[in-house]
Amino acid sequence: MMHSIELSLGFKGKRTYVHGTDMLNATMQSIMDNTPHARVEKLDFKIGAMTSHLLNCYWWPKSTLQAPAGKAIASFTFHLDGVEHEGKLTEAEGFAEDRRAYDESLIESNSQYSNAKHSISLTSMPEGFSSIEVLIALNKVLHLKELRLPTNSQWVFCRWESPKWPLNHDLSGAELTLEQTLGTRLTRSNIQLNAEHIGTIYFSALNVE
Image (tube, rainbow, N blue to C red; front, top):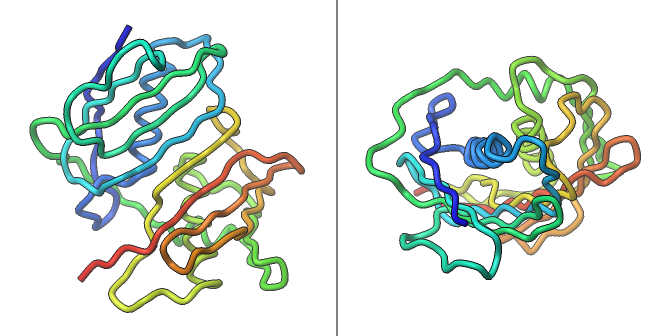
């Protein structure tokens, strides 16, 4: 059975595109609302394009249905109570309109960078941010300290992997370590909390000329 819903999305700060953390959060919240007692595991969420549109979210048991028509802004796979599912986000009619303040410096001020370990840690969980927002902001800080960004480029969040979802609400003590870089084309960061692997973040450098 295919499920579908139009996601309620807006803009963060001065951005003119829907942030990847909002795509991920809204998608997974829709899935959990539909099956509130199910286990969500082995999540792999890939963002393929930036958009300012509202988005339709579809998901279905893998291999039982063909994907719906429309270019995928994001695609994802996950296990729901052990059953593998896949899904995609496509552009809906109309554009996102809501906008909210988003001060990432509040996250950076609660972090500690280690040059020796090529890592950044969260000292305390800031209020008003979701777990994935905090992790993506920390990874951005880590990248700006560790890597040289080409002129007229910015780091963008392009993929998330985690053994389970949702994440802990309090990520105090979480540590992100830059594990692999393929130039600026793709990077991979590992996230540990209390000596447990909780996720992997991939970034890519996007030309914004």
